[in-house]
Amino acid sequence: ALERTLSIIKPDAVAKNVIGQIYARFEQAGLKIVAAKMKQLSRQEAEGFYAVHSERPFFKALVDFMISGPVMISALEGENAVLAHRDLMGATNPKEAAPGTIRADFAESIDANAVHGSDAVDTAKVEIAYFFAATEVCPR
Ligand code: CMP
Image (tube, rainbow, N blue to C red; front, top):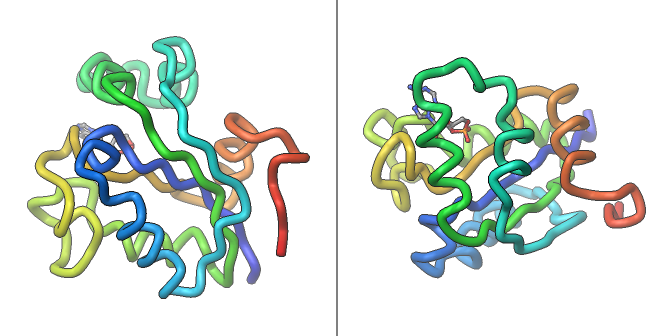
């Protein structure tokens, strides 16, 4: 099915100057960028985005990292976009990520793991709406 998913290129990958290399992987996999913005997240914004993790021991470190520099936020559209994007990213822990995935190639640790992607179609809807007004999403 035609789906949308939210992608965040995290501060580590933005600092490494590999936004274009990561976008190229999306495009080569048939995913279209239908919305995009670079943003320095506030603590409140990062905490709200990751609210589902608020009771986890890594929450403070996660939020501190996500506000340590600008992120590149995109909505991607394509056939089975949620799973296609997760396959491109690889496992959350880059040490467990398959060779050739974004996290294996660009990430250093489970905290600085280069990218975030929605885990399901319903969470993707919530995550896209968290960062983009309906008029900022451009189906094509
Ligand atoms: P992300 O897909 O952005 O969702 C939550 C993030 O928390 C995850 O990627 C990791 O970067 C970070 N994190 C840190 N420790 C853990 C952990 N033990 N399990 C899952 N995620 C973790």
